[in-house]
Length: 239
Image (cartoon, rainbow, N blue to C red):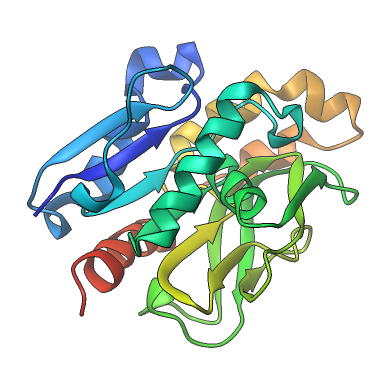
């Protein structure tokens, strides 16, 4: 069994990372004993060779403060690599920026969200059944922070969930049953969400949004932990 590989495209804000560490540790903590095998991490912003997609058990694509719309050279290399991962049938879970760049790599389009910034603890509504949401109700709380959106899904993609501001909060690919992407952050808990809102307060208030309400409403989201563990048990280790 190859490693579960975290493809890192961004950094946890320094004040949060000083106390909580980087994304790899967050995913490992939430997934826990659902994945008893090896882990690996690769920063896709660098030039180091990446894991052969056939040698990995699966991939988790992190969030980032970058925008897919920047079209930076490293993003184009990353998109090519993601197309290879998908082509060989590797299990893939895109998270936030990872959700967006996966969609862009496969023929979708990412733009700034015309509905505005989505931040804080929000309600997601699932559309039908999917292994990623096994055990969850029709509505569940998620933590989110983004200003971009997948405006056009890849051909053949199926929307799995929506929020009030995000019509493509999660998607699957009909022809690639082990690929999923979520716009929200299943790895972010209430403590981290409050810190993120505090750091972004000046931007939130400049956009006419209520940072105090976001702080008051921020909470842990057990559904996020379930999503991560479901990805591993149902799509990486499953039949």
